Image 1: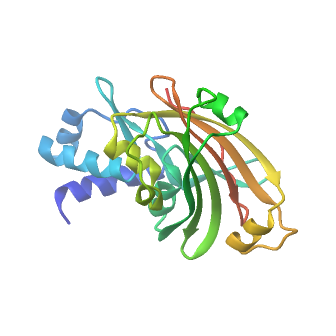
Image 2 (image 1 turned 45 degrees about the vertical axis):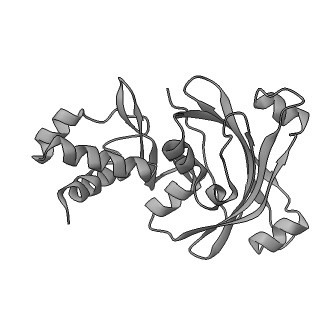
Length: 240
């Protein structure tokens, strides 16, 4: 195992066990060099890997912050597990060792419905990408997502970008930094199409999460309504 991989493994373990909680500022590069006895190049490579995996976010002039607490789950008073996540579905599932696939059912350009356009700060005559995606984890059809992203913010977004992680696309292909999200959680009855995609009976309730996500400058950049099968539950965690 390379030295940077050892650093990655140790920091991931500390994120998992809560040593570095959500939104926590990681030690500086100099302190990490001293802690692990490695060069700054090794630490930079380790931070690059953690960022690609969606576990940290770097903020110029501030440092690196924990973006998600993935394998470690919290428990509500009712005994239901919840996860702290700002890294997206792909980062969450892969960090738990899952094999993730995304099937893009629809990718088109559309004028969002008025409430969604307003939540995204869009004018009535502006257009957005619209995506319907089926997210599959270890061959379990887990989630259907309906997403709108303003074209003015992401003029080069393509269908193949939606086949993996939109968060990774934003981190790697844009200068934007994801900051926070507002989420509303409710139970919902599946549509016939969702029964087919999620392989659930029509009388099985789904967990619906409606959320708007924001960049560090306060601009909303994504509206998503996702429907989750198999008892998943999440909570919203904002990032400063």
